[in-house]
Length: 124
Image (cartoon, rainbow, N blue to C red; front, side, top):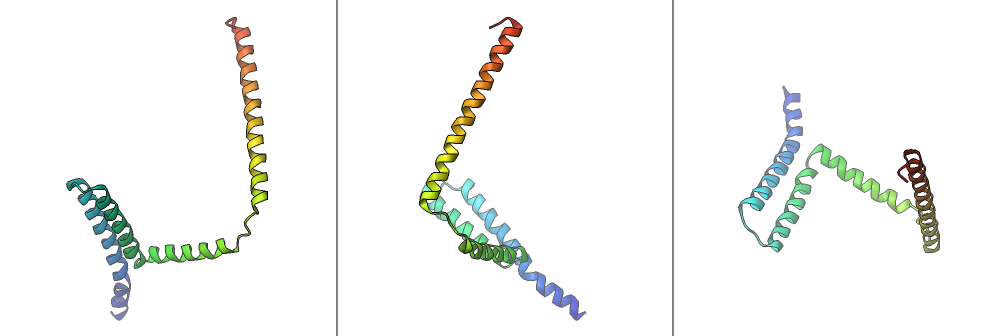
């Protein structure tokens, strides 16, 4: 009996959190479609919706996993060794050159195939 009460009491924050997300979302959409707000008011409404949704999600199990994942991702991004500016520019130039060469090769193949098909069908 006691364990059932404990299980239910553990689930209540999650249920309240998801209900809060649904309620805030319904209010935001009803406010958007039934009332004519100015653009700044709509922006504030959607920003409030986003922040309240994040707040309510924090109290759910999935929300806590999501926030934990975001924190771990931030730590991993701090470990990344970013390339220097010169390396970035050089790599970008190589990619642009290869895209141009590939485009030219595909254009040449397309042109030659159109010429061959034209000769076969006597249309070219």
